[in-house]
Picture (cartoon, rainbow, N blue to C red):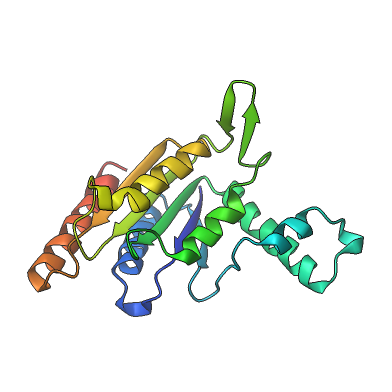
Length: 202
């Protein structure tokens, strides 16, 4: 089992999503000791945002790329290789301003590539990443799941990864984290119970 672990919070050790994603990965490793984990911290080692230079690098042969274009091409290739090699992915996705962190969006833009992770056919689009399992650790200061305010967060992630062909998606959710100590403790406890239940039968 190859597992890709993605963190995106800018809060470091104060991050709830980092704590919970780490607990998911540790529970996974305990249940499946042969699991090999690849870790990417999108806040500490940010991926540059999708740009015209990214497209130019992809469309330029290696011998004609300058150093900047080669860096872009290498970054895209390495990010894609990590994702494609993974049997399972754990993504920590805190809510920032009703959406996901820009760091996480930048990573998604590198893996959503026509011909590699999806393709267009006469019948419509086809995701090419079926068979992967995805666990999304969703954290928020308020209560947004199932509400209009959550469309740019959990709903977006569900649609995006569904577009890539991933249908085995589970959310570990901790909400209300900014609504006082009692709500924060309750939200974290519920998420930790989800993690325990998820791996109890493994």
